[in-house]
Length: 151
Figure 1 (spheres, one colour):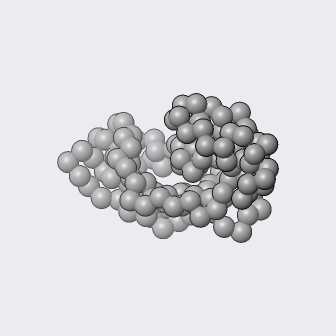
Figure 2 (cartoon, one colour):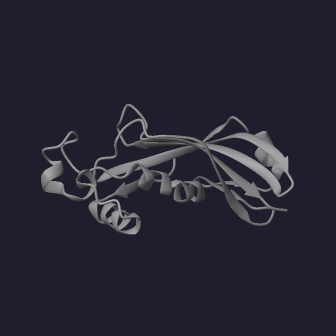
Protein backbone atom coordinates (compact mmCIF):
# COMPACT_ATOMS: atom_id res chain seq x y z
CA UNK A 1 0.00 0.00 0.00
CA UNK A 2 1.40 3.38 -1.03
CA UNK A 3 2.24 5.68 1.87
CA UNK A 4 1.12 9.28 1.35
CA UNK A 5 3.20 12.26 2.47
CA UNK A 6 1.47 15.65 2.41
CA UNK A 7 4.39 17.85 3.49
CA UNK A 8 8.09 18.04 4.23
CA UNK A 9 7.15 17.80 7.90
CA UNK A 10 5.51 14.42 7.20
CA UNK A 11 8.70 13.27 5.48
CA UNK A 12 10.83 14.58 8.37
CA UNK A 13 8.65 12.64 10.84
CA UNK A 14 9.24 9.43 8.87
CA UNK A 15 13.07 9.67 8.79
CA UNK A 16 14.54 6.30 9.71
CA UNK A 17 11.29 4.36 9.19
CA UNK A 18 11.27 1.48 6.74
CA UNK A 19 8.46 1.77 4.19
CA UNK A 20 7.28 -1.39 2.47
CA UNK A 21 7.69 -3.97 1.20
CA UNK A 22 6.52 -3.08 -2.28
CA UNK A 23 4.41 -5.10 -4.64
CA UNK A 24 6.51 -7.82 -6.30
CA UNK A 25 7.94 -7.26 -9.78
CA UNK A 26 8.95 -10.26 -11.91
CA UNK A 27 12.16 -9.92 -13.90
CA UNK A 28 11.68 -12.18 -16.92
CA UNK A 29 13.96 -12.82 -19.90
CA UNK A 30 12.03 -10.38 -22.08
CA UNK A 31 12.73 -7.53 -19.63
CA UNK A 32 16.40 -8.55 -19.41
CA UNK A 33 16.70 -8.67 -23.22
CA UNK A 34 14.99 -5.28 -23.61
CA UNK A 35 17.41 -3.77 -21.09
CA UNK A 36 20.35 -5.35 -22.95
CA UNK A 37 19.09 -3.80 -26.19
CA UNK A 38 18.59 -0.39 -24.56
CA UNK A 39 22.08 -0.34 -23.02
CA UNK A 40 24.12 -2.39 -25.48
CA UNK A 41 25.16 -4.80 -22.70
CA UNK A 42 24.61 -8.21 -24.32
CA UNK A 43 26.95 -10.21 -22.08
CA UNK A 44 26.00 -13.89 -22.27
CA UNK A 45 25.22 -14.16 -18.55
CA UNK A 46 22.25 -11.90 -19.29
CA UNK A 47 21.00 -12.88 -22.74
CA UNK A 48 22.15 -16.43 -23.62
CA UNK A 49 20.09 -18.93 -21.57
CA UNK A 50 21.88 -21.95 -23.04
CA UNK A 51 25.37 -20.73 -22.22
CA UNK A 52 24.27 -19.21 -18.89
CA UNK A 53 22.92 -22.62 -17.81
CA UNK A 54 26.54 -23.80 -17.63
CA UNK A 55 27.84 -20.55 -16.13
CA UNK A 56 28.40 -19.44 -12.55
CA UNK A 57 24.71 -18.77 -11.78
CA UNK A 58 23.10 -21.71 -13.63
CA UNK A 59 20.77 -19.38 -15.50
CA UNK A 60 20.66 -15.89 -16.96
CA UNK A 61 20.71 -13.04 -14.48
CA UNK A 62 19.45 -9.47 -14.64
CA UNK A 63 21.93 -6.67 -15.12
CA UNK A 64 22.73 -4.89 -11.87
CA UNK A 65 21.78 -1.63 -13.53
CA UNK A 66 18.46 -3.14 -14.59
CA UNK A 67 17.73 -3.78 -10.92
CA UNK A 68 18.78 -0.21 -10.13
CA UNK A 69 16.54 1.11 -12.93
CA UNK A 70 13.52 -0.38 -11.15
CA UNK A 71 13.98 2.00 -8.18
CA UNK A 72 11.53 4.61 -9.58
CA UNK A 73 8.92 1.88 -10.10
CA UNK A 74 9.36 0.67 -6.52
CA UNK A 75 9.42 4.22 -5.17
CA UNK A 76 6.09 5.06 -6.84
CA UNK A 77 4.59 1.91 -5.32
CA UNK A 78 5.95 2.60 -1.84
CA UNK A 79 5.32 6.32 -1.33
CA UNK A 80 3.71 9.40 -2.84
CA UNK A 81 5.01 12.89 -2.11
CA UNK A 82 1.88 15.00 -2.59
CA UNK A 83 3.48 18.41 -2.19
CA UNK A 84 6.07 20.63 -3.81
CA UNK A 85 6.92 20.85 -7.48
CA UNK A 86 9.01 18.52 -9.60
CA UNK A 87 11.04 15.56 -8.36
CA UNK A 88 14.54 15.56 -9.84
CA UNK A 89 16.95 12.66 -9.51
CA UNK A 90 20.15 14.16 -8.15
CA UNK A 91 22.26 11.03 -7.95
CA UNK A 92 23.32 8.27 -5.62
CA UNK A 93 25.75 8.21 -2.74
CA UNK A 94 26.19 4.46 -2.76
CA UNK A 95 25.00 1.58 -4.93
CA UNK A 96 25.84 -2.09 -4.27
CA UNK A 97 24.69 -5.35 -5.87
CA UNK A 98 25.26 -7.98 -3.11
CA UNK A 99 23.59 -10.91 -4.91
CA UNK A 100 22.35 -11.75 -8.42
CA UNK A 101 18.79 -11.60 -9.75
CA UNK A 102 18.14 -14.88 -11.59
CA UNK A 103 15.72 -14.77 -14.51
CA UNK A 104 12.03 -15.04 -13.50
CA UNK A 105 12.76 -13.83 -9.96
CA UNK A 106 10.24 -11.75 -8.08
CA UNK A 107 11.71 -8.63 -6.54
CA UNK A 108 10.34 -6.53 -3.71
CA UNK A 109 11.77 -3.36 -2.23
CA UNK A 110 11.72 -1.30 0.90
CA UNK A 111 12.56 2.39 1.18
CA UNK A 112 13.87 4.34 4.14
CA UNK A 113 14.09 8.12 4.20
CA UNK A 114 17.48 8.70 5.81
CA UNK A 115 18.10 12.43 5.43
CA UNK A 116 16.32 15.63 4.42
CA UNK A 117 18.29 18.82 3.82
CA UNK A 118 17.66 22.18 2.21
CA UNK A 119 19.46 23.37 -0.90
CA UNK A 120 19.10 26.29 -3.29
CA UNK A 121 17.17 24.01 -5.67
CA UNK A 122 14.78 22.67 -3.03
CA UNK A 123 14.69 19.95 -0.38
CA UNK A 124 17.11 17.07 -0.94
CA UNK A 125 15.69 13.75 0.24
CA UNK A 126 18.03 10.79 0.73
CA UNK A 127 16.28 7.46 0.30
CA UNK A 128 17.86 4.05 0.87
CA UNK A 129 16.29 1.28 -1.20
CA UNK A 130 16.81 -2.40 -0.45
CA UNK A 131 15.69 -4.69 -3.27
CA UNK A 132 15.49 -8.42 -2.59
CA UNK A 133 14.64 -11.54 -4.58
CA UNK A 134 11.71 -13.24 -2.84
CA UNK A 135 13.11 -15.88 -0.48
CA UNK A 136 16.75 -14.76 -0.81
CA UNK A 137 18.94 -14.34 2.25
CA UNK A 138 20.77 -11.28 0.90
CA UNK A 139 19.47 -8.28 -1.00
CA UNK A 140 20.22 -7.86 -4.70
CA UNK A 141 20.49 -4.08 -4.47
CA UNK A 142 21.18 -1.54 -1.77
CA UNK A 143 21.10 2.00 -3.12
CA UNK A 144 21.23 5.34 -1.36
CA UNK A 145 19.58 7.79 -3.76
CA UNK A 146 19.07 11.54 -3.73
CA UNK A 147 16.03 13.36 -5.04
CA UNK A 148 15.47 17.10 -5.13
CA UNK A 149 11.93 18.18 -4.35
CA UNK A 150 11.48 21.57 -5.97
CA UNK A 151 9.28 24.23 -4.34
